[in-house]
Figure 1 (cartoon, protein in one colour):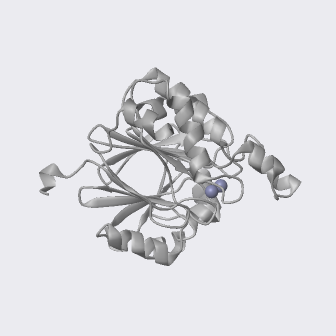
Figure 2 (cartoon, helix red, strand yellow):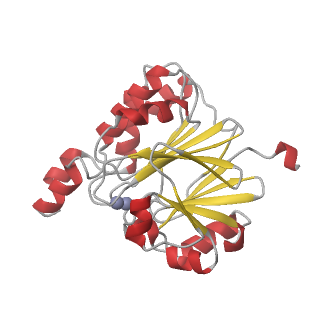
Length: 277
Ligand SMILES: [Zn+2]
Ligand SMILES: [Zn+2]
């Protein structure tokens, strides 16, 4: 494939969930990570699989300071990788110096030829955010670790070609499950995590605004309080009445996810309907 034919953006999940989150986004010769919460072996394997090494990473975009999103930060900083984070996340992770770019929520920044916008989320961290990543008109929205459906997320969700959105738990499984009460309250709170139903509702509202094809990756699934097929079914049912459709893929928690390339993965409504049978 010549450089001219290369997709504007290529995306792969290196891990998704409370054990570690990282997403590799490649654009031409440069790559960025969204979060770096996976262990060194998963990080290296993911990079190797994409034909990249640490030295090829232009920046890591940090959504927030929780360890499952920031575990590899010291290693990346030692390797000279730029950090892009809100002021609160930079402070909370101790990331400082010339290689740190602070991004205010709602604003955009150019990172190695990719436009990055920080999106508001509610979560129990210092200053958490999601990210909208754009290159050559192709958009990828990455939104995990949020307890409420912020109106400001609708536009990025409606216009993104690939959406990586949290579907953390099934509310009934969580309520009836083994978590201690304080943890159940935390996950269910407005600064906790998004349920399958909340995820489905947010997508249905956003997609109703703009009929177009896009791919949905369900992220940060709980191993205890969710099942991949359940999450996929809840979201698929909420979107079934819409014209344009959407492969819906629950991301694996501790292994490499699928690779998305801009311009691929278009499916029809008929295929989605069939997959529900
Ligand atoms: Zn998390
Ligand atoms: Zn978190």
